[in-house]
Amino acid sequence: MPHDLSLWGLFWQAHIVVKLVMIGLVAASVYSWAIIIDKTLLFRRLTRAMDRFEEVFWSGRSLEELYRSLEERPTTGLASVFVAAMREWKRSFGGSGRSVASLPARIDKVLDVTIQREVERLESKLIFLASVGSAGPYLGLFGTVWGVMTSFVAIAGSNNTSLAVVAPGIAEALFATAIGLIAAIPAVIAYNKFQAEVAKAQVRLEGFADEFSAILARQVDERLAQATHAPQAA
Image (cartoon, rainbow, N blue to C red; front, side, top):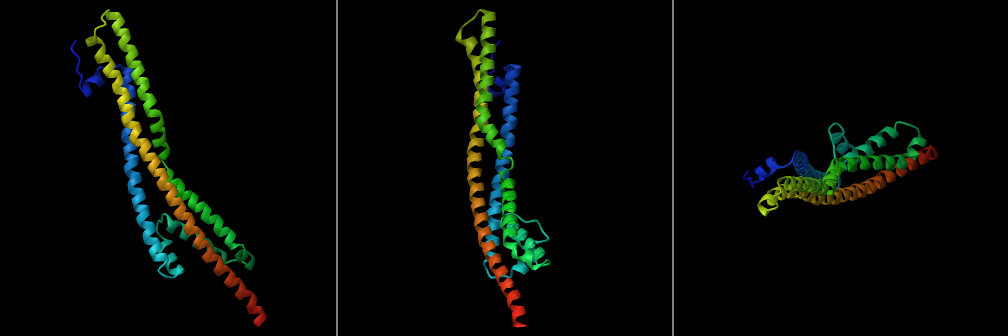
C-alpha cells in the first residue's frame, strides 16, 4: 500500500501506542504554552505593579493613607508585603506595651511568610514545565523505539527488506521523537527563564521587606521611648 508521508499521514499510520505517545506530547506542549503565556503576562504585570508601588511608597505619602487605600483590595508583590506588615502593626498597638516591644520580631515573621506565599504563587505550575522538559524527549524516544520495533516485526512478516518498505515505518517512529523535542525545548527554556524571574522578584521583595521592617522598628523604638519618658515627665 502507498504510504502518506505527510505529518498527518505519519500520525494516522503509526501504531496505537505511538499515537498515544504523540497525543500526550501534543497535549503537554499545548498546556506548556498556556503556562508560558500566562506566566509571561503575570511577571510583566508584577513588575509594573511593583514599580508603581515603590514610586508611591517612596514619594513621602503617609503609611496610614497608603494602607487604607490597599487593605480592601487584592494585592500582589510589594503591596502584599506592605499590607501584611501594616496589618500586624495596627493589631499590635491595641495590646500591651510588652506586645509592642516584640512587634519587630513578629513583623519580620509576617514578612517572611508573605514573601514565601508570593514566591509559591509565582512558582506555581513551573514544575509542569520542568517535567515536560525532562520527560518529553524520553517519551518521544519510547514512541520511536516502539514504532521501530513494530516496523521490523512487519518487515519480518512480509519478508521484504527494501528501503521503500522500511522507510515509512521508521519515519513514523522518528516523528514521535520530533514531537517530544518540540514539546521539551520550549518548556526547558521557559522554565529556566521563569526561575530567574522568580529569583529576581524574591530578591526585590526581601530587599523591600528589610527596608520596611527597619522603618517600622524605628517607629516602635520612638513610641517606646515616648511611653518611657511620659511617666517621668509627669
